[in-house]
Length: 170
Image 1: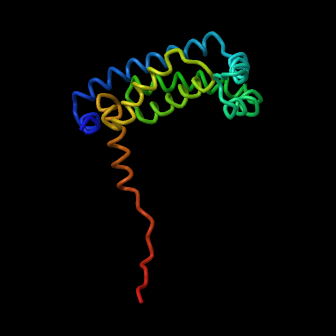
Image 2 (image 1 turned 180 degrees about the vertical axis):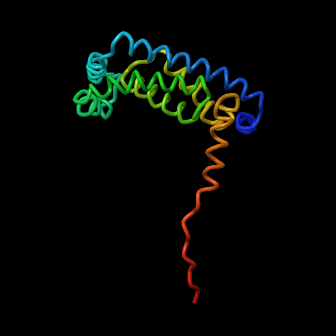
Image 3 (image 1 turned 90 degrees about the horizontal axis):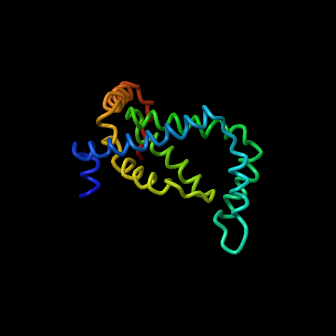
């Protein structure tokens, strides 16, 4: 019943719009500061690796292996992906454009930060994001998704589908 309300009612769309605006502002602010002030993930990644040892490690070994073998050797890529990803997720959430995809990408970043041993506001952001993800298209009802999703659906319905061969019956 709650999921139905989240996915269909205008009142939930209004509440989800507030969630979107809050999350969008948080993402834009974080991304913009990284872009303007300069961002280097090296220190953060090395700090996460340091949290992977000891009696009660805050970073699991599989994530530490990812950091050590993929993220640190390619830190230049992450130095671009993180700030621009944060900024673009924030813009999309505020505009209500590709809302569920933007929310999903934001959740992926939140989880990556938490896997790296950082709590901060990430858990609350994930909680709010989960409501947006469950709501689906209704989360972008009061945003550009109202037009973008209908345009995409109309375009997809006009796209010819491949012909399926008829199965022969014996």
